[in-house]
Length: 452
Image 1 (cartoon, rainbow, N blue to C red):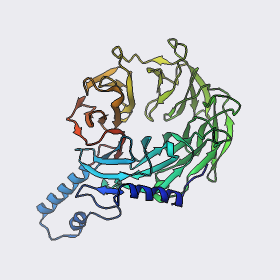
Image 2: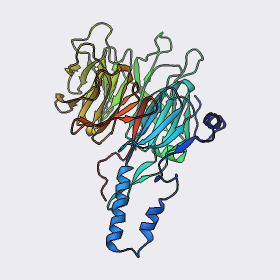
Image 3: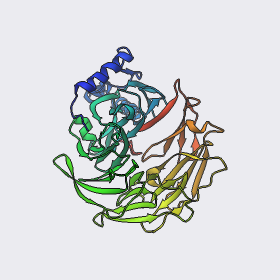
Image 4: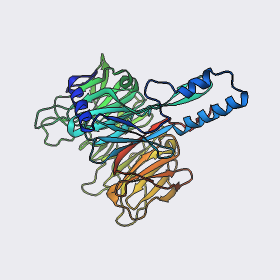
């Protein structure tokens, strides 16, 4: 598995192609009040250095500047379906800030842990590219100050065969490369942080001896990654290993004795790491020296059912496990998965789901356009918001603000974005787009506090 740590000719070739495909406009900036990267806001410099203004006039200018910062505190990056184009919008009002051309068509997009950068997975083209959303916050001692600049494609990028699963930990992100059995390309893992992206630095790497459709979770200096016996016919792994970082490479420490056949899906909370298995959920407890146990399947599991997707949150002890469209609670204090009892009408399915409100609730977007909120304390239904009526089920996607109260439902069939206030349980007027949004990500200041 090759990797990019500095700008290289192959990536440059992709950028040349991108520039050719869109004329000379790889990045189109639409907003008039957004500074170019690396340049300070001229109005801010005047406010800071012009001491001849009257006191009330100066206060008025500061209030205006603070208001602009609040409006620029978050952005939505939306993928235009079937293209290599990303549209950047202000999350507050839907104004388009910029249009970016990426190196290839996008498969998935994820936020980095600081919510300044987004990782775009180009699985079919063996690339991961990164975009600076242009919004971040700095600690100024007595207040946190938000900044807004033009979004930009970063020089930092990754190459490897079939990048697929992307996961976040407190120390950064992990990308799992599946490899390819037909071409004898092996699987691997790379880990990196916001600082790696900003400095165009070196990522940490782990390389296997065979291909697999696996996953990895980053825990400080450790990575927990799936392992597959090359002699088996399935591309799914059946075990998890613990690896420790030494000089930029991960070295094998142990393979957990508790097996995980048909492994697919992983997540982590503050203390635990979860992996989905055919026979339940593999639970690995970090405070107990990475001890491994199995949470077995619920009694209502039928033949062919297995956990394939997991969702977890740093502030929630349990994980949500999804098996054949049904929701279960993976509780470290329980030996068996517990049904969540999510009520859906006949023929309705869940199309997207995430923890919201800083882990206080779990949101499920249904194919009938309803957004259901479960209280993450007792897992009762907290609210049901009918965002759309009779939508095309395969056209819906959910984007959430990580610590705040907003969510955004993408309706690609009607080229819409519908903002939803999760605290008030109401949806706002839809934003009309001139393209079909295939997915997206929220970037910005991940707190509600913007006051100086």
